[in-house]
Length: 354
Image (cartoon, rainbow, N blue to C red; front, side, top):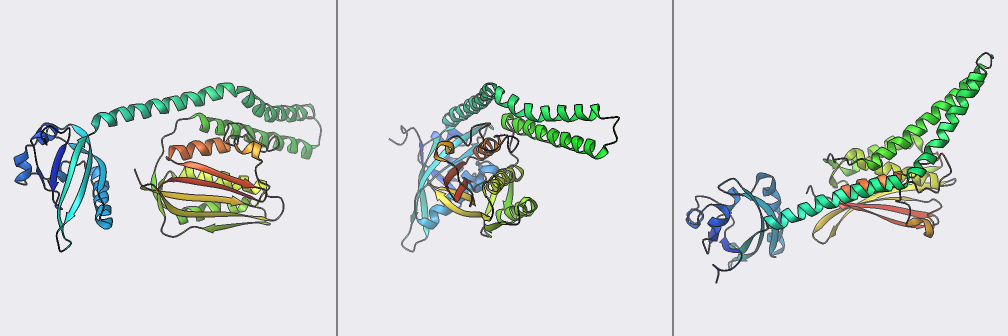
């Protein structure tokens, strides 16, 4: 019966040695049952180095909670092929509570992983194609956004040229400074547009999240009016694998939006905490402001490219679109809640390196 099962049933031990019940292990790994039984090779010898820690961690979690485990990792066969394995098992204990052995089963899921990877690749291509299609549809919006600063630049230059022979230096200086300001605005629009359209690879680093947020507050504090306070509630023990530059871009965008939504005295608060969604450890980072809020008819449009409720020249309407894209790349999402006097943007993404 075991020989005819589409899987390999095994009995293992805490030192990663295993005893197999049938010979299918040889067709899977290239190593025969006797080599495992005589401990010439242990199962841990086959697991790829970069997958070993996560495989071990799932076993430790099962030990803590006295539950079964279900893990996926890659192994290298005798011929050098790399296979994806799903490993499901149950730890058994003797009367003293010591580990007796592990009973489990190995499944070769390489084909399933290959199909999943291909689907993800196609999905990414569709998302990118959708982005570019959106850009085509929104060409008029881009033209409008760029047209305003370009007209201002053109007008300022024409005025200066007409009065070149006059002595009014201060007036001409002001017109040139205004032209320079509009150039920066146009550059900002183009930069945001490129950021939105570009397929950019993340550069993940392990960061202490409290220290990371403190640095952002130091960067942004000079932009905040004196009547707006900024507060932070971030525990010391949160570490996360993120692209620091891009997550900084997201949080600064939320803070500046909150600042612009506040009229007179108010506050911006950054909260962070850890939680679980299923078996996945998650980081929750929330930016809350006491501004005027987002209307019900607008809240479903805020992540659309070029959508903005700000006055002309105050924003390109790409900041939240770019932020949404960055968080999606981190495998996360953004939740939004808003009522007059309180708006919360909550970024949620996995804490684990994988």
